[in-house]
Image (cartoon, rainbow, N blue to C red; front, side, top):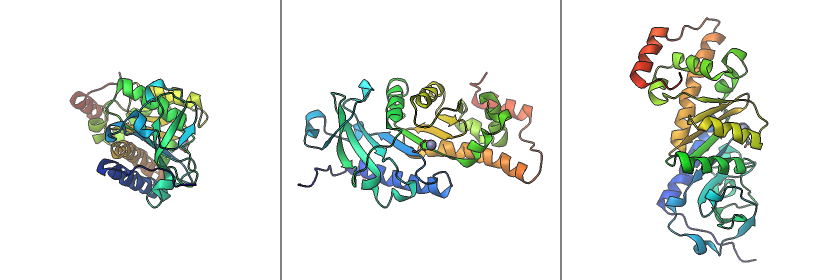
Length: 273
Ligand code: 2HA
Ligand code: ZN
């Protein structure tokens, strides 16, 4: 069989591959990406000069696509079962750059997808979320899902498994959160991983948030690029970590006072009332 046609990546796409590889390492080093945990997708249509028929020669994978707005667009997605810590070394086995066919009957592999790689099992959910973002928040091109330990731990504590309570706690542990994430985080109730139900509760939370904590599972963030999405998760997890550090040391946690929180709300806005 002749070698599969493969697109040569321009500077922008090369940079993206590098950033996703780096992100894979960050997630692993933070202990948020055990085994094959997590997945990433980025919409890259604007980074590709060609359109439509120019992709006819690339190998097609048949698959029903249920999001019409995704037809004719290009995405980078991590491969199913891939370890975050291995992406940088073997990007073409751990990622797929695809063009979603206009007919919505499959996608063409433009780059990557080697060694039998298939898109993440959460692919359908990612497309659903990208569809929402195209229509409601088009600057958000990247979606990152990972398992940040301290944040997940908080959702196992009944008191904090409630949107208002957890935001209040996180703000009170890290004043700069209010500056960078004035709207706070969304909290999605537990749903089985990989299901349409999980995508649905995520979508609801994304209507007012850029970062959604999945009860007893992990979190998902959007960003203009993958690093921006990562920064959000990193910052929020830091607040959770400080709280748990104090608790683990055996102390009651003081946090910011009511008046200090009020001052932050006055200065940076309060979207939670
Ligand atoms: O991709 O983390 O929730 C593996 C997961 C699914
Ligand atoms: Zn997960």
